[in-house]
Image 1 (tube, rainbow over the protein chains, first blue to last red):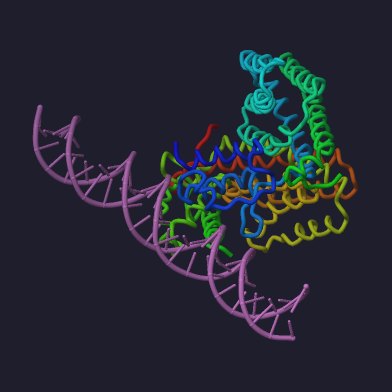
Image 2: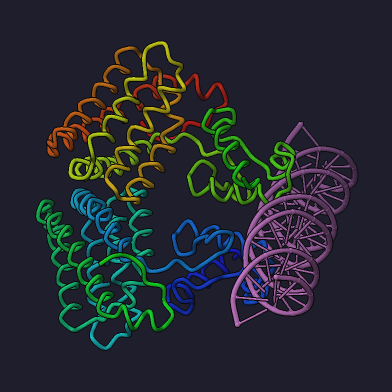
Length: 222
Length: 222
DNA sequence: AACCGTTCTTTGGTATCCCAATTCGGTATT
DNA sequence: AATACCGAATTGGGATACCAAAGAACGGTT
């Protein structure tokens, strides 16, 4: 695998795991030292991450993208029709074995499994549904959305009840797809997107002070 | 402006205007000569264009993305909910002066204006409506879709009647937004996306042989 | 002590160089 | 004549060198 992709993946992991704080300054030369490489692949990786919205230019400098509450609202607004469309198409095109695989994924999340696993499955569920739609643009767009939401979802305080609610929504969506009830599936997906938005914003607003104290740039209204 | 952006814009123009044929091979070293620069900004520009879907990797090589009929179908499927959402939000958020500006844009397209202008306005109409939605992700996504459709739209044979149909659909959408009839606007936007898809596919299929003869890679079913 | 200007450092942008891998020709062998 | 094999040339990936501009540090002036 090329260095560029290695650096891209590692740097993305560092950003998503908040190893690099939102708003933090990045210099190409620090990264070149950090990854024991030259600036060429570092630059290529930064260009990609910029496209994914995880890194941005601040004047001539690079910074880790801040967590933006306004962006989370906008993302939900953007995401809702995408999820609805994906779910509708999946109803028409998905085969039962595909649905079994996704259900298995959900079932693997028992209370004792680590948080990372829950986080990953919570992302993959939506991407895999999109994949069943058979439309690559839906897949790419939903992947992009989930990446942009990833840090907020990571910071979210998962109570037993919120966790339970998210998973039961996932299961309901899957159930409706399985029985081909596309309108019900669409309504449920739509509600799930809004619920998720509300949970994220509530949680981030509650912790805002503490997160700022950790040096994280949290911007946006409300 | 940085060289990278200059190269990016020029190369994009060359691709969209079919100056570089779909499927054509690109080498970094040819581009470096063509733009009198070094490979560094050429590479950055290629990376961007890859993200926009205008250039792709073919093994280790770069090629101009072929025109893919399957992709045009998938784009329409993806685009429809986006346009519908943009139009609905625009109904709620747009101010009359904004709508006047867009209408003026449409009016500027009289039969005698050059084809380039029609092409540009046909793109900008959708982007500007998206802008009125106030959601930057919708704007970006619709821009991306229009860029990917651009060459197909350029190759389309614009008959007087098809041109007239597209513009009257645009005007109807705008009219419904102006009067706040969001459901009618949404239905109209939805129909417009499907009409456009059908026109593009019909036209490309009819010319397929001729386009292939010009050395253009046209791929995809039907 | 505050402010301005100069200088020196740091940074990203660009050019160039090197390398490994792949491709394409040509040649020799069957 | 077909094919297998070897080498030269080309290509993209990476490393390094150089530059100009932005910024910080410092010193001198008021």
